[in-house]
Image (cartoon, rainbow, N blue to C red; front, side, top):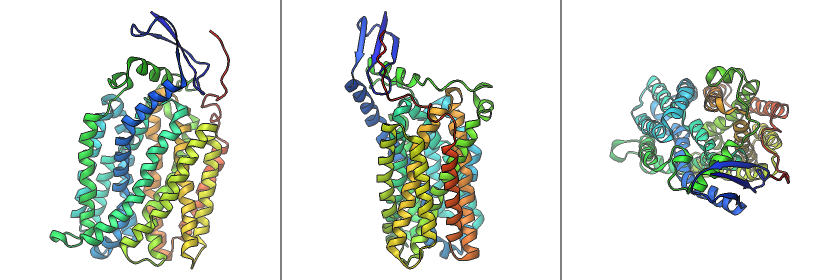
Length: 467
């Protein structure tokens, strides 16, 4: 039985989908805006709370080393350079296994992939409590990167199965909000654990921090395996009509033509836009990693010696960043102004970092400027992914998303180590902040000249075509 379904939503008002199914009545089935919103609201409520918590733990296990090192470095005799190199070793392992992990996910599904990743990264994070020498520190950070590889690009790829391009910026903003929330939680929580559990049962505070923040990830991976659904067509918690609606929306991406040279790694390397996207993500990742690993040290240098106090003050820039990110994501989705939003966000971040570097003697001025920089950096991420997942052809999406995050992993390798070496050599983070500001400005310039962005998403203006 042939069914014609008209989708009367803003982005797809002129789309007519031919669907086959015995469950629907014959003739023309009109799907109202309310039905569409109800379907996606149900999907969001089902998937996003668990994925959000998983992403929070993912970010905490990456950045909590920034708080642990305030006690760990003095007890183990690590220099700022050793800490910076150790923080970077995470991304060496991450780089090597990012693409293979995403390709495995495409074959075995999200549930098994998240189980493997989260179970192993939780154990690796917990094992950091055993570190005694710089080499042991480097090894455990490398293994943590190997085990976490593929998590974030895998989740982004997973969401493209459920959401069409015009809904992705706000959804990916929720994932990025997990990173901001992790920054808000990691500081006070890590500071409290380090301060109050120090010497409990023979373990130092920084050791307890890794235990209490690592093991929950392993437990959550097991929960995700039994709770998530790999594909919309397997979602028994959706009606048949809703499954067809999701399938028709995610299939309707008219500008995603197949990449020349076929799919896989060979296809992605032949896309000119891939290299530009990789550079853009590298630039904003440099900003994010620098703030994640060195914000506690910067706040410490502004006159706060208590670890718990440093943790609480780190709430300010992350809170402002989260509010800005949601506002930018919703605004760019509504106006289809993703390019403009990215350029503005990177320029604000650059100005904030450069001004922070040359501001001395004023705590609240420094906090205001670093908050502006944080807001700019985190706001760039969801609009970037809305663009990238629309520009990349579907036949190379899995490899493309993983490859972009792999290239960005260079930021994780280079930035913390470079900042540590510069601070050891000069006694200040100012030079590193100036270089980072210039990099973010260059990202804004590249985005302003990137081809294909304006036509990557459908027009908001509905047509009155009849069938």
